[in-house]
Length: 192
Image (cartoon, rainbow, N blue to C red; front, side, top):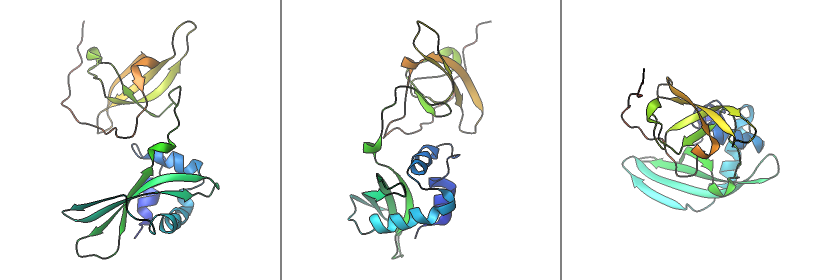
């Protein structure tokens, strides 16, 4: 079972605040929400016949992870991992999610606007710590100085916590294995 809503509202939704990067990659390979059925058909064709790479029993049923290439609408191969589950008492696997395999990652030398970046330094005056995730909102180029970026940080409700401008060396791109983490909010230090 592959739900239309799963593909349209999440996997192929570039506006999704966390999953949008996978949608951007899938769109670059020719998949789009208006023709979501193509991705569903390709998953059935290229993934379901394969053996699972990982299996794990959960309280809700058996979960399977499959790593395989898709022959995309662009004619290029894209390696993705799909996660399926056969719920307890059911006999049909259900698509949980899919994501690009890490070997598709292309290193970037700059940070794209409006994408996530991870802070590599503590900024106590702004209540920010190493590992906080923000959105790059502007690039700054000044002769003789390394490129800088303005980054907006939010809480999980979407409220802006801080906007800072830092050198590129204070940021890194998200990598496979990174996960959002919740920690108690620290008030920003104010000197008045």
